[in-house]
Length: 277
Image (cartoon, rainbow, N blue to C red):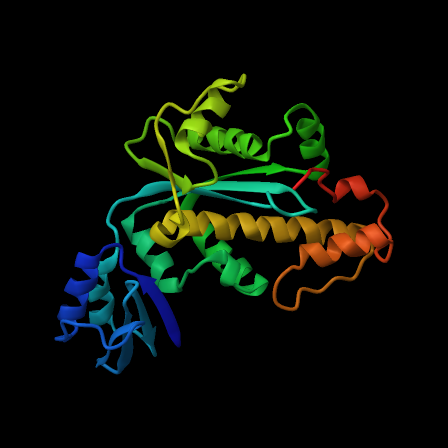
């Protein structure tokens, strides 16, 4: 591995790791970078936002030191993909790593915000994450979404109900449940309580930018995005449309080509979500 980004889970762990690899500065080098140093032929850049960039291979000794910046707690993390897309399903993933060893494997394999990853990277990382985690998926396809949306024209409520069902899969375990905040906690509970769905017996923490703070949430987003991409590619292939992802799947471009008739599809309702933004 040539480059690896890891975000320390706390300021204290960041400082402890920095000192363990020979760091001595007490003030930032610049507005962005705290310091640069070399440890056993690995160039390490420490950023003020607690991100740490490793360049070149990581030695066994350095791998052991990295334990300091890893959150030792295991969580159930979830995230969704497709809520703001005009085509394709809403995909929600909830997962927990099998153990701390598996969590560290995923960290050292390299993981970041799915929105900043290419489709190829997402597929590769998703496969690795799934091998090291217990996960559940909910896929609400466009025709099902359209049917439900007629009765419940509230995308956030639909998302809340999907999230609730997946977190119930991990009930009766002493784990903290976390998702990226798409609505405030009070409104989330209203959505669940005002439905026929049995509520998850626990507390789901809705945290702003959770994917930047919790590896489980970032991992869930990657798995969900990979399934979303696979779904779109599958149906384009079914309609004999030759579509190749160059970097990222451009759902808006696909939507426009379906709407204009440039992409001849058997049934637009298979692809298109009919909702008001």
